[in-house]
Amino acid sequence: MKVMLRQNSAGTLLVYVAKKDLEEEVVHQTTGEQGRILTLANGWELAIDLLQDPLQLPQTVEARRLA
Image: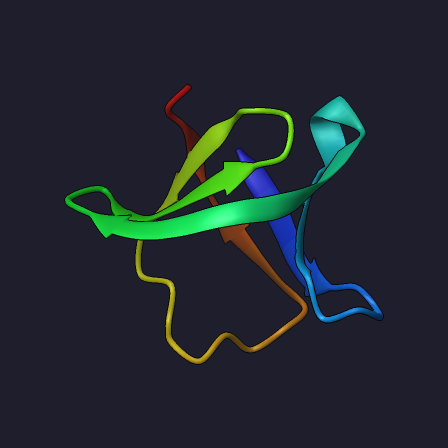
């Protein structure tokens, strides 16, 4: 699924999923074998391949939902 990554005014990373009309804060980030794994405030885990560090925001990327 396509997701948009951006920062809010407080500097927190946000993920917006257009098909679900969902915008949530990222509460935890890890790096795993699936790429970077973002844990959202609602409990979803999204795996994103090839996400460069430092992040260039805003950007739209392809993500896979793990949980």
